[in-house]
Length: 69
Image (cartoon, rainbow, N blue to C red; front, top):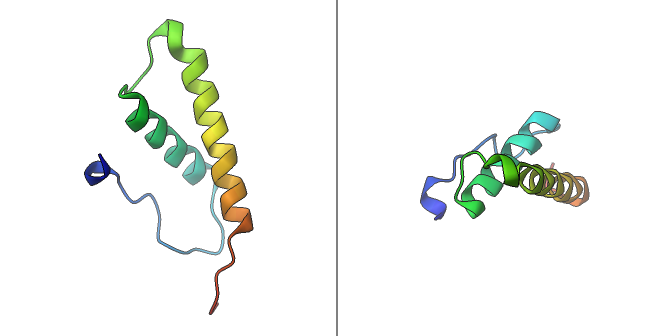
């Protein structure tokens, strides 16, 4: 599964754009669900999952401490 995950940005940058977080969340939900795009009857669940993953990712990035910088 992990072999096809793409690096979306450099390992450390001063600021992370919302687009980066959203792209990572979308990539994760696509990978874990097995669908590139959801069927219409699953769109709400798919979008909610992307929102939840994006929120968790933003919280993670806000809480990380990078030493040596």
